[in-house]
Amino acid sequence: MKIYRRMARHDLDQSMRRDLARHIRGLAAQGMQDPGRLTVCGLSYLRELERQRASERS
Image (cartoon, rainbow, N blue to C red; front, side, top):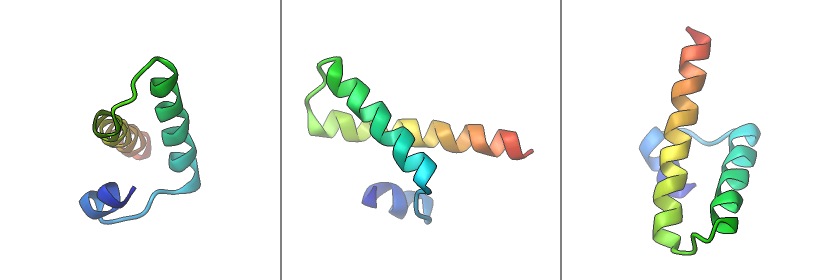
């Protein structure tokens, strides 16, 4: 979350934190264990959530 905060220049809201945790738990349940890979996948997921929210606001 610190990496995302630096990149996006804002914090995550509770909904995004919950969605991110669910996504990472799902990846771990599928067997992904590498912390670096989980971080990259989590950041990609957050970027996609931001895009979706931006398009919903437009």
